[in-house]
Figure (cartoon, rainbow, N blue to C red):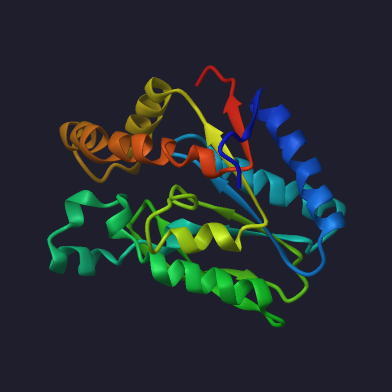
Amino acid sequence: MTDAPHTLSLTPAQALDFLAELARDLLARRAGRVALGFAGGPGVGKSTLAMQLVERLNAGTPGLAAYVPMDGFHMRHAKLEELGTAGDKGAPHTFEGAAFAAFLERLKVATGPMRGPGYSRQIEDVVDDAFTVAAGVRLLVVEGNYLLLAEPPWRRVRTLLDSAVFIAVPRDTVRARLLRRHAAACLFSEARNREHVERVDLPNYDLVARSRPRADIAINIVSDS
C-alpha cells in the first residue's frame, strides 16, 4: 500500500487493456491464487470493468479468472427491515463485511470449487449461489465499494488483496448514472430514487473516495457517460 497510488487517466477501453496486462504480470510474479481488487464508489463502472477483464483473460486461457463481487454480502432485506436500516441500503453498515472478508480468505486458499452469493437489483436482495469459483481459477477479480476502507471489519479485506485498483469517475457523472440505474429497476418512484441517491449513494461515493490512497493504482476514467 502507498499514500500516493500511481494514477492514470484512461478511456474504458484503455483501462481494460491496462488491467489485462496488470493481471498477467501479477500471475507471472506470484504463485498460487491471486486476488486483484477493484474499488471505487457506486456507479463508477467497477463491475463492468471487472467482468470484462475476466471475460478477456478467460478467452485466452479458459478458467483462469473468476469475478468475485462484494455486493452479494449485502445484509438481506428482511434483516435490514428488522434493524430499521433498510433506507440506508448500500452504506457500509448494511453489508456483512466480516462475512465477506472471511469468504475471501477461504477463497484464496481453496483447493476445490466454492460458491458465492450475488445481488439482484431486480428484487433488491441477495441471491444465494450466484457464482462458482472453480478449483483451477488462479485470479480472483474482487470488486466492491468498500474494499479499501480502513475501518473494521473492512480493513481485513485490503490485506487479502495482492493488488488494488481504484476506479474513479466524476461525482456529477455518478449522480446521473445512479438515477438512471434506479429508474431502470422500476421499483420505486422518481422522488424516492433521487432522495436515495442524494442521502445514501453520493455520501457513500465521498466516503469511498477517501480510501483512494490505500490503492496501488488509481484510474480516472475518461468517458462522456
